[in-house]
Image (cartoon, rainbow, N blue to C red; front, side, top):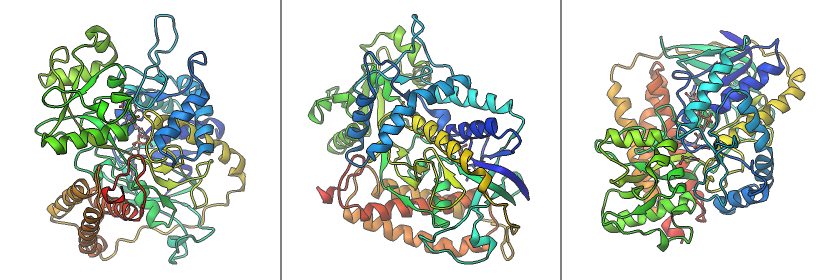
Length: 523
Ligand code: FAD
Ligand code: SIN
């Protein structure tokens, strides 16, 4: 049994920035971060392009960033949230810089602001093409200096502690006054479950790209937070709005995660071509390669389905190689390691699952429908992204909402009651699984079903088949979960099945095509 004032689940940008803010204000309170892998492993670490914010008021304005976000979101953004996040952006960026994050600068000392798809202005701050790596480096090094923050790696959050466990009663959806008292976590080193009591729980578990076969998200992105929230009857929405990035590197044999060729490469002037070398984006949008992601992704998907090819090309051969190398050293090196010389060879690319626009519903303070349970970052649904996240708005959202949650908690912390006595995890009647193949096989089946039937283009028939097949897998595993001792792989399978079910169910319920969501029977 562990006890802490603040339990933070996840060590990406959302969790770490929240932990730093509360640790600085509540100096006599304890902050415990648990994370399921090593501390830097997260979607954040792989972020390439950067963070969008309005810093140059001569060429850019809040109004333009707001308009671009709303346009990409295709009518499903919450305009008040968009305004709040965009206007708060520059202050949050300054804080990130105070924490030690270094962004590339021009020779005149001003930040080097670049362009990405869907943006009408150069407004992306970046650290070469490894912005996320730099963010994790700086935040973890600042966290290390804080006496009241402890990080424990290889601890996997399983379920929240609520009245369901404490009073041993069934909760119903929409029930008022459910409280969160912390969480159970699996110590992956020895497969033992520990109980963590906390006054405030911040869920920052990131994305769920691993529900698909081809994704830019690392292995940790299995939708754990959303699945936990769903089990605890927290309100969830818009998880059917999955963003596929247009340009992940096509490789044979496939690599997981798929290596990303940043949108900033198209912002730099790279051109898409089909396998015969012809440009095609003009057929789909007047902004061509710089249209928003949903449009570029569907255009590539349409071209691939028509031609039967496995990939299209990204052509960088006309770009200044010196400048390209300087901005994209990581991408250049990766291509070169595969024998692709970007000066003369085209880069083979294909869309890949990248980001979940929906998630756990939160208010402007990051509060969920359960008391003392906050979320921020990719696992949350704030209303910023609508049906299609504008490039580089995700890291920004995580920063703004971790701050908003901190401000709200500053006001309310003194009124939070003491945590009640908490029951230990009950694993009586369970046995160690001797057949890991049952788990790996089902995990693969889930991602195959999702990729084949709930991908970039959906249809009523495909969704019905997915729902049916997922239901079979769910029914088969229901008993298996009850009788089997927990391991990381078992917990992840359970969460992936839940995510797949939710994405499919919400897709069936959506009656209008918007942004990244496309069901061909609705057109
Ligand atoms: P993450 O950074 O994913 O962190 C989640 C943390 O939770 C991890 O530490 C993970 O191990 C932990 N965790 C998960 N489940 C559990 C559990 N059950 N128990 C304990 N710990 C758990 N966005 C931009 O704005 N700009 C970009 O340039 C950009 N580039 C991207 C490039 C790539 C390749 C990818 C994959 C994403 C990119 N994104 C970008 C999106 C952005 O990186 C993410 O949305 C953002 O980093 C999410 O931050 P987060 O803190 O919410 O989650
Ligand atoms: C990229 O660099 O293309 C990713 C940017 C993002 O996901 O916002």
